[in-house]
Image (cartoon, rainbow, N blue to C red):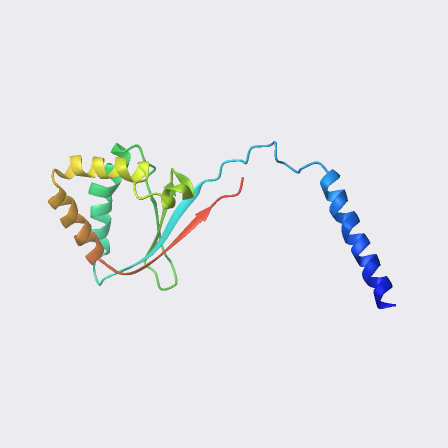
Length: 146
């Protein structure tokens, strides 16, 4: 009895495999629709640091992104939970930017902020100050579905 069941199973499996070869490939000829990818960062400020963080963001980082032709991050002030705010930043190069040590958006931003601040030392000092204003953060990557 077991041999008969096993043989029927083999024939059914072979028939299914053969039928799948005869079926047209699904959506292989259609290009995949573009997705928009984002970096989403939750931020908890050091005590009293929120105002200075916003000042640096508005007066330095956002203008550099604009000069580089990059989307401006959206800041959401949290109304509950442990985080002070949420920053949503579009990744113009998509998730492919994570596969590169030198993504084009980063190259453009680095050039823009260097030109704006005048020296690498000034950019480093500003970045270190910004990092010192943050007690904790958590970053995620997301994308939309077309």
